[in-house]
Image 1 (cartoon, rainbow, N blue to C red):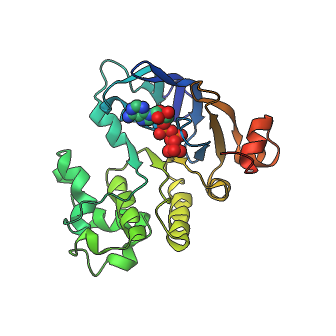
Image 2: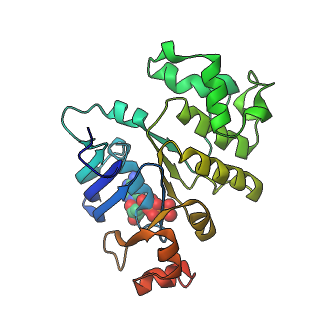
Length: 259
Ligand SMILES: Nc1ncnc2c1ncn2[C@@H]1O[C@H](COP(=O)(O)OP(=O)(O)OP(=O)(O)O)[C@@H](O)[C@H]1O
């Protein structure tokens, strides 16, 4: 049973690359059924932080970490915890769509299950459900055996979302998922995010202030000032962060005065 009121929670996360301290004391809470946007200028540590939430950070050589991340009350950095199982529970979608290009659409959806040895969960129903949840079933249902490379960039990104969803994650991390997409594809992904949040917690890194306001319930503003490590300057309801920010630096950033 969870000991936290939040589904996912970071406590005093500090990150180093070699000697360089790049994130300081980041404590954020991510409730179920909410979308949290991480915003801030380039280089303030948003992508680094999101990677600490599913133990992808430690795959980078020279990466150091202190602090804890509670997933449903359990520290994902606990000694007894297998990092692979964390990455299955906390899925991730990247900036650039990265389907397996020569695999078919269907094989892509099922690839995570195959790679993690969960072959008994593989079924046509799961392919359909995952593609439906990623809002692309009607577009691809008659071409499931076509290679992923035959899809548009926006469709490839939704296929990557479907691939994550097939693993039935409890949290979905999205690192600038729309930055390589046109406005129409961006809108489809945003609609998908709003549908998915009914069944999970979502954390999204975005440089698009309108997108943050359209999709997120909460917003965290990160800033790394004058060579100092990145930290959270302000965290709260998205409406407040954008319309009545407490910190003048948040006000300047959300109104486009820097970054
Ligand atoms: N693999 C790495 N090795 C060394 N330093 C890194 C590595 N990845 C990121 N950094 C450094 O950590 C800091 C935070 O980078 P990060 O990519 O997390 O920022 P960001 O806010 O996501 O930036 P952007 O918005 O441009 O994607 C930067 O100073 C960056 O140079």
